[in-house]
Image 1 (cartoon, rainbow, N blue to C red):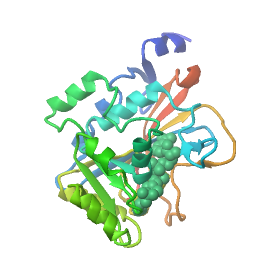
Image 2 (cartoon, helix red, strand yellow):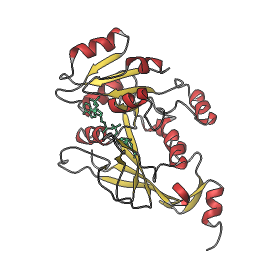
Image 3 (cartoon, protein in one colour):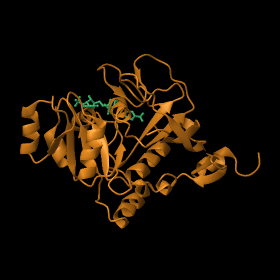
Image 4 (cartoon, rainbow, N blue to C red):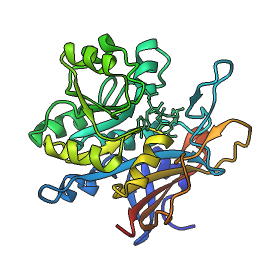
Length: 284
Ligand SMILES: NC(=O)c1ccc[n+]([C@@H]2O[C@H](COP(=O)([O-])OP(=O)(O)OC[C@H]3O[C@@H](n4cnc5c(N)ncnc54)[C@H](OP(=O)(O)O)[C@@H]3O)[C@@H](O)[C@H]2O)c1
């Protein structure tokens, strides 16, 4: 091999771009350079999401004991997390699930919502330089409306709850009484198209979903997802009780993507490589 060896690249915080053109690039700044803010076109929202998966497609596995799930310890890693923060930096709004905010309140969440907690100062500074609010708005998708109000109110950011007409009215009223905006965007479930339109109408146009497979299905079913960032860790986990990136009725027609960029990060979890893939929606 000529040039820089993989270990050296990892130590230098570099990745290899494999597509569209082979070249080396620093990991830090890789996704920020995608300039997602330029994807918002007038009044039209731009929606993107990301996942980290094992080679056998697991984005979450069962936690021991309580029936809940979590991102596998074998795939989660700081380099992927850095890229996730770079995706959050330009966003107007971050979509999370009701489940996530319940875990946040109970202390069992695996992380704080981006960009809270331990975040590289340059990303927060970058946001400020763009004239954006300090934190993207937190958009909570929930049908149960079993949401920890105090925990939500502690967040120093705009909070919007998106729910359906079927959600319990008394719970919606309690949230509203505490100053939390509740938007009904769907009949029995939240409808992705209505959700995105409601957010765009509030000037939240660059929308990043960090939620899981049910929200992903909601976005795909409504045909509103523009881009998917997918990190595939080159490890097979197997095991029972897991989730893949979309969960819900079969999509008809299927949701098609085209490859936009592909990178090899030689130093994912425990030094195992990971592919960083960027897919754009092929049919809208
Ligand atoms: N590997 C990865 O990159 C990755 C990324 C994200 C999440 N995950 C993992 O995936 C698992 C599930 O994550 P998650 O619970 O955040 O995501 P989720 O499965 O997308 O969301 C589930 C919850 O969101 C609400 N919801 C989703 N779609 C809805 C709709 N159309 N209408 C109304 N409510 C809707 C419901 O909340 P209520 O119960 O409040 O009604 C539901 O319980 C977790 O283990 C998480 O760690 C992995």
